[in-house]
Length: 276
Ligand SMILES: NC(=O)C1=CN([C@@H]2O[C@H](COP(=O)(O)OP(=O)(O)OC[C@H]3O[C@@H](n4cnc5c(N)ncnc54)[C@H](O)[C@@H]3O)[C@@H](O)[C@H]2O)C=CC1
Ligand SMILES: O=C(O)C(=O)Cc1ccc(O)cc1
Image (cartoon, rainbow, N blue to C red; front, side, top):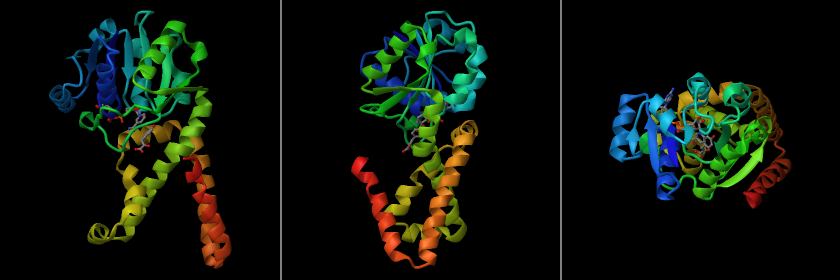
């Protein structure tokens, strides 16, 4: 099949590599809206052809939307005239707002997906060969899709070595919030907290592994994450409230010098890594 990818950054670029490597795509077409990325995509040979959006729509059996989540919504009107056999799959990190806003005309064609894998890097140069291998992709609200479109999505994701999990978009957004969006909010906060107190020289000289681990995702794209926080605002606010409760709890145990409780509380946190 021909696969057209809109947005050839980390996710789109890595998908282009994977569908070529596994022989799933006969041809990979790319649509790019910025000159700097075009140059990088050509140099990295991520796609067979860079085309305009109309050509991509006509020549692709499957169109992948690998752009920030607000851009996915903004692009809906461009796809209202696609062929009934063409499948569209989005890779956005949020699902509820996207699913709610898919126009009725293309709802059968549109498979909402979220690959639960990524890095803090962005742009075509961030694309990696095996990003998707052995990872999970969540597909949402498939009851509204035609079988042919679901089958194509399964062929692509299973074909590049992914495990598929199906759930409703609202349920997805709660899980994604706690396991990805809240951790990003915490990492951005930690980075800003430390920089508001420590000068760069001390950070360079003294930062140890733990701080580097916890602040890695604070390097993530502000454009992409502002969109995600906006679209998952309600869940993010509740998860921040709950996190604040836990911060208050540790603060109180330290303030009260309740070290017995503190040790128990930490031991409970250790058990997360028995399941991860
Ligand atoms: N970064 C990550 O680890 C993960 C990201 N996602 C989702 O995947 C999507 C893409 O993210 P990344 O690849 O990380 O971002 P990225 O920033 O690496 O790539 C996005 C690309 O889309 C292009 N773009 C933006 N607006 C466009 C438009 N209107 N038309 C055409 N191209 C446009 C940008 O120029 C950029 O090259 C986002 O929706 C994100 O939420 C999902 C899972 C993991
Ligand atoms: O860099 C990391 O560890 C990530 O967690 C990347 C990531 C970012 C956004 C997603 O929707 C899913 C995964």
